[in-house]
Structures are given as C-alpha cells and as structure tokens.
Image 1 (tube, rainbow, N blue to C red):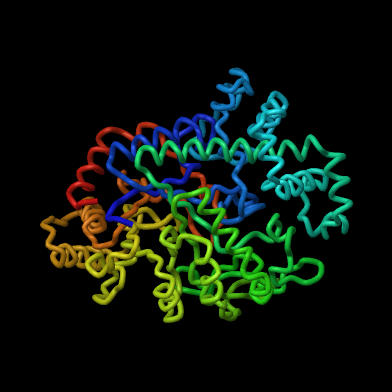
Image 2: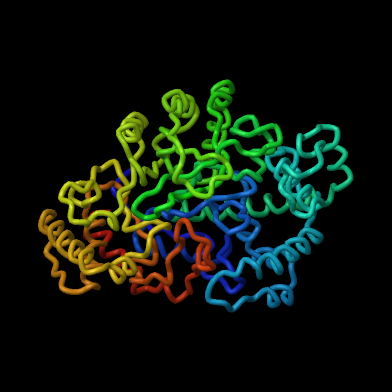
Length: 498
C-alpha cells in the first residue's frame, strides 16, 4: 500500500431522497468527489442485510447484500418500476427511517421482480451457480414462519432435512426466486459501482465483522462450527470485558466459534469467507482482529459481560490456511480495544497493517502509541472510526483536563513533526489533528467524511453498547460534497504527498 489517503463513508449515509444511500447515482457522484479531491480510497461499512437494531455488524447472512442498497432509480431506468412508484417512495426525514424502508422498499422490490425477465441469461447463470440459494431458502422459510428465528422452526427445516427443503423450494418457487433476484440485483449494481470506482483510481476497503449472528444462514448451514447445544442455543456468547468506555463490558450475544471443528475442516469456512470478501472489495478490514488471537466469551444468559473468560485461538494454523488461498497484502487489521502481547505478536506474524486512532492519541501520555510522530509506515491512521464521536464532537465535549491534554499534545506533536501551525482555539485544534494525520508516516490516512466537514456529535455514526435511533442512521446531503471541500482535501493530499 503506497502513501495515500481516503474517506470513510457508509453507503447508507450517501445522499438520497428515497430514505437511504444506495448503489445508484449518489455512489457514482461520491466516487467523482473522491477523484476530484485526490483521494485513492473509499472505506465503507459492511453491506450486509441488517436485522433488529439495524447494525451492519449483525446480519441474516455474512455474505448477503442489503436489499435497501438496491437503487430504485436504476430499477426505474430498467423499466421495472414506474415514475409514480418512485415518487411515492420519497422520504424527507433528516435521518434514515428503517421502519419506512421496511414498509415501502420491500413491496417495491417485489413489484420489480414481477416485471423482471426471469429468463435473463445472467440471472439464470447466477441462480444455477447457487451462491445465494441457502440465503433465499432461509428468507423464504422466515416468511412462512412469521419471521421466527430458524431454531424455532419445525425440525425438518431447523435441521435442514434435504427432502423437506427440496419440497419446500418446489412449493415456494417464486418466493425463493424473489430472494435470489434481490441478491442478484444488489450484486450487479455493486459490481458496476466498484468497477467505476476502480477506473477512477479509487479502491474500496470493505469491512468484515468477526462474528456472525445466531439467527443467520451461516449458523443454519453448519451449526457444528459454533459452541451450541443440540437445540442450537449458544453455550457461550461473544463480548468484551469492562473498560474505560463501558463499566459492564459489551455483551454482543453472537455465538462463538468452535475452533476444534474449524480445524477438522482445515479452516475452510474462514478461507472461503475471506476469499468472498476479497472478491467483493479491493481491501478488507477484519473487525475486532484481537478476537483471532484470544476471544472473550460469556455464559449465555448473563446480564452483562463482567464475568467471562479469554479463550486462545489456534491463530497460526488459522492464518497459515488463510494465506495459502488469499493475498494477505489486501487485509487490514482492526487491532483496537484490549491489546496485549499476544495480539501484537500475531499482527507482526501476519504482517497486516494495524489501525492508529488520533482521537486516542492526546491523553497526556508521552509514550502513547497513537501519537502521530510515533506511527509506523505499515499502519492505517484515522482521526476516528465509525464507533467514535466525530473529531469536533470529541473536542467540544472534552472536560477541562482532557482538553488541556488535547491542546498540549497536539502542539507538541506539531513541534515534533516540524509543522508550523498555531493552535489557539477548537477549530484550529481540529484542523491541526487532521494535518498531523496527513503528515504521519502511516501509509494510509483515512477520516470519516464528518471530520473534514467539521461536523459535531449529531452526525456520529454509532455509539457502541447503545440502541439509539441515531445509530446507523446518519445521512449526508448533496451540498456537503462541494467543490470547496474537494479543493481543500486535494491541497492537503498534495501538501503531504499522499
């Protein structure tokens, strides 16, 4: 990875008058904005179909695409939707309403499916390939089971009796085909957008959650890969222990992996999953990378994550198998959270660039590893991630002690790196942190779009450990991507040789 920079922008946050960003015109416009501003990378969040809570880190299938990312304007251009149907789908809210999308968008996709040519050669080839068949069966079965969890279905479906599934597919052929159409359409639109980005010199960094949801295609297809009982109830669930940010820890509830079973299969599931991710994106960021050295598990039913234990992963064997089939230079490790010598040794062993967050750098500790003057070349520097407050939000909400550390730390880093800037107010502090990121030795510097626009906490993407309406609901407007912002980004990119 050569010295470069880019922006973090979730697809759902792209401007749209239909309630959510998608793979349509706004995506192409954003690529043009990146090109005009000299940026070479676009980092996105997982593109998967979300469930309760709308988190892209919990999905019915780790390999799915969200139906909401299908551009309905593109479907209109294909003659699959009418102008009246488009106009009835307009949403004028300031943030994404997933309730509105569920009510309006899914019926639209069904109308498009009815008008779609089901003899289309590319579609028939996609269906024959079978990559979305389990997903389509899963979603169709959910429909007839009133959206119950798969482990609440009748035994023949719950335990995947082959004869019963074949009979169900024949009896519900149109419904199964509809869900195949959903994935085919989303994948086609995404691939077209990605090709456009690549032609413009923009690479896509995708995000791969470490865990899968219990009620998912992944678990349904092979439950032996997880620590479950015979009724598919988790014996243990994933989380992280208490820390500075959360006194009770975080109880995620995902089933944890049974690595003894993965070993028996030669870690094929992991190899296939990362291969698939790299077929969708140019680079992949593995979320919660520390969980591939040791992971934290809690008894199922616990009220919080205070009582749990760390479990060692056979990481060297796992990554040996992965590196036999993938290009490891296309992987980034999210090495945040509780990092110990084991994680550091694993990161050195695999050679992936880790993440360095400037929001964590200026706490008054001179040996802080996130200080911009200390960053190694083989790293990705961020002002903050999707789980952090915006940079301006962090500065604005800081108490006197923390703000003093911010000012003193930033001034010292500017001095250490030979950057001549005055820092006498919060906006100058904000700009100085961004310039320090650009000036750092890290090969790649990324920042959320919110930070270059000096946006506050009301534009924060997610607050971990909470279920808030604002989480995963932030949306930008067209006017945010103006010439002035692009010019400012391009000047910084040139100034610091990125």
